[in-house]
Image (cartoon, rainbow, N blue to C red):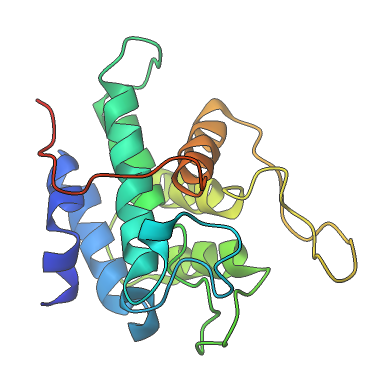
Length: 188
C-alpha cells in the first residue's frame, strides 16, 4: 500500500484541495519509518492499538478522527479551512517522531523537526497556512514539553485555540484508557 492510500480516509476529510495536495506532498517527503513504527517505542505511553508495526499511523489516524468527530459538534468555531488546517497538522504532527534519520527512540524535539519539514516542503500552499500548520505541530505536545533527561523546556506550549485543539486531539489519541475502533465508518 502506498503512503497516500494509508491515509486516504484522513486526506479525504480535507475539503480544500490546496491543503490536501500540500499534505500529500509532505507525506511523500516523510521518512519511511513513519509508516511502520509503533507510536511509542517503549509501549509505555500509548494504547494497545498504537503499538507494534504501523502503530504510529494508527495513532495519527485516531487523532485525526477525534478532530473530525469534535468538528461535528457546535462547540468549536472553526470554519472549513481552519478545520482542514487542523486535520493537516494532525496528519503530519508525528511525521518526524524518530528524527530525520530514524532514531531507535522518540526524539524529544520531533515536533520542531516536523514543523521544519512543513516549512521546507516542496508542497505549494499559502505562507499563512504553512506557518499555521507548522506552529500547530510545534506545540502539539502541550505541557509535555520538557526533555525528560534534563528537565529543560525544549518545546513551545500551545497558545492559540487551534494549537490547543491539536494538542487535545493528540493527547486523547494517546490515552491508554481510550481504545479505538478503526472499522467504524466515518459519520456524515
